[in-house]
Length: 313
Image 1 (cartoon, rainbow, N blue to C red):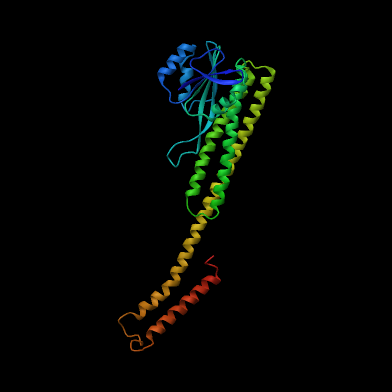
Image 2 (image 1 turned 90 degrees about the vertical axis):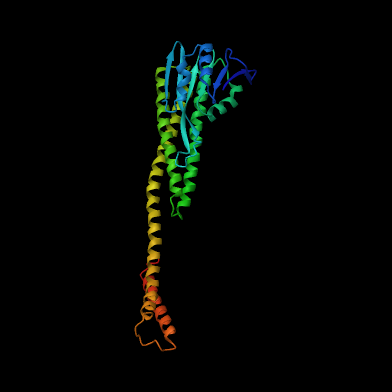
């Protein structure tokens, strides 16, 4: 799906065809015919448009025939139905700067692009570099927001793990850990890209725009540090709570073993007096009560012994 937007009198208007100063957003569903037609219409190398289809595409920049391409990794929720997959993944977004337009290509629905569209009326189409930096800003902000959500979800699961003796919470923490691995890899790649953009001045930024890029580098470094901290905390948490759950299960098994031992003595005594051999009580009217009292007494004594040794705790 290809949409064309233009900013007129601080209003974002969707138009039918590209024109000078317009923003072109390409999002799913994607068709190869549309790519080929747009590449011919805007004189863009076709591979610039199709690079975003590769979910493993790395962050980089490239220039060909005065058309500049910037590929960034951006976070998104994982819509997979597999319960073992990560909650969040990272996907590439391609930003293409032509002579007159800005083209963004997304292989999935991208929250950062939606945020940018909501603020497009405040942008100046003639300042393409500033528009690109604002897209960068929305992507970094998305990383920050998702990291906060991950941390809140992690804290909630940790509280549930205090009384848990099953693997459900641990599996959810594992999904969070997978998400953080995606984030750390993407943020590190984006940070290197921003640093290269600053060093080479690929976008030919002004002094004001360079300051904004420097702030973005700092924010990306902060997000990367947060992701690393959360990853380390989560790794320690998984190890600690795996041991806690194992200890809880051992405690349950120990209690069951003690109960089994306590109940073994009444069964043993009843078995002895139930054999078809003389026992001296076969004609006594009090035989049942004697066996019952003896079994109960021994069970109480054994149970008291285990309580004294604190084997029920």
